[in-house]
Length: 258
Ligand SMILES: NC(=O)c1ccc[n+]([C@@H]2O[C@H](COP(=O)([O-])OP(=O)(O)OC[C@H]3O[C@@H](n4cnc5c(N)ncnc54)[C@H](OP(=O)(O)O)[C@@H]3O)[C@@H](O)[C@H]2O)c1
Image (tube, rainbow, N blue to C red; front, side, top):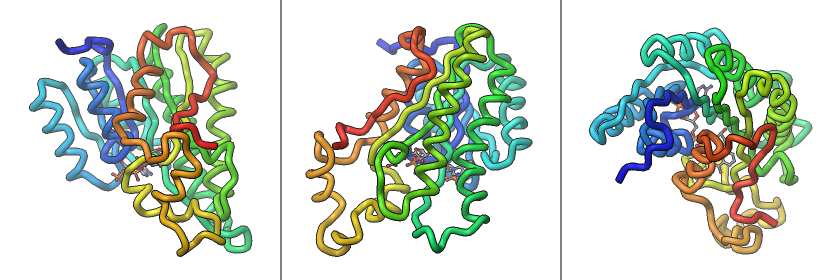
């Protein structure tokens, strides 16, 4: 029997065209939510996901919206409310990676990374919360990197650490409306992002001497990357009524990173 935690609810997922966001869309839809998938460039993947969810009996739409552009985020949220008549859940997954040494970081790099990972998540909350009532659920995305040092990872880590401070402080304001806001800090998860940037997590002394998968065996209790569906289960928990008394917190979802 279908688990119905999200029956009658409407969820918007930014960064839903791939990776963790797509897994969250599948999970929430499988539990009854109507979902809106926000994406930046991968229209084909977003459309294919909408077709997949519809074929499984779900209701879904895909909407192009650059998370770095607050006006596009507002248009995404407005479209969801127009299409489905309400908004219960925001899951913010849109994010970009960055690795570079201090001497190479430019002001443009700073603005580009923070525009998506930090500013983008704040304005998604602002626009979504305006349409939510009591019981609304907001889940943002941090990273294990917010609390663990890696070479050349300063910009990305700082952009995610700010998100943990955002949920902590916004929980007070949103609590007045009965809305919860939390973040997830995933560890390494098997997505396109991990394929492209995973090796960057190795200490420079280890570059070329070990593989990411061997290194993970020494860094993570569960000795492997997460599957996106495993991490999506954490997002679904925070987006559900099971997490009704949890707000302002960041859930570490990293397989036990040392
Ligand atoms: N994978 C990991 O190991 C890991 C670990 C910790 C945290 N995270 C975080 O988890 C989130 C999802 O990561 P992922 O691994 O699933 O990444 P991914 O496979 O690279 O997918 C990223 C998703 O975000 C979307 N996106 C990127 N920039 C966007 C923008 N400006 N506006 C709207 N959408 C945008 C992409 O859309 P298009 O493809 O349509 O452009 C795509 O759907 C990110 O916030 C990431 O920082 C990931």
